Amino acid sequence: MYALVEFKGKQYRAEKGALLKVDRIAADVGSSMTIDSVLLLSGDKVAVGSPYVEGASVSAVVEEHKKDPKITVLKYKSKKDYRRKLGHRQQYSYIRIQDIAGV
Image (cartoon, rainbow, N blue to C red):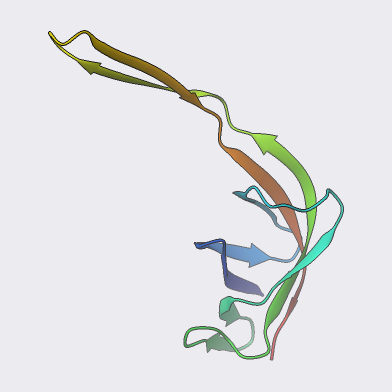
């Protein structure tokens, strides 16, 4: 059984025991959370929501917070003496899916 969930504007395939890499969330490591925006439930029967499946939810636990490697962005315009160097490290969280509750 799996579910397609929408979390922070992105869609993920959630299976029981799966580890998902999502954008950074403001929650402590070990805290539990519930995702109610389930788009599709697949098991014995397939339930498709419009937009969400009624009564379906996914429970998860925050495992850790990490950062991606640094990305360097260079801006340059020829003959104009314009150069800019910027860096960015995207922060993300790992969540483990505990249970999928459906109809």
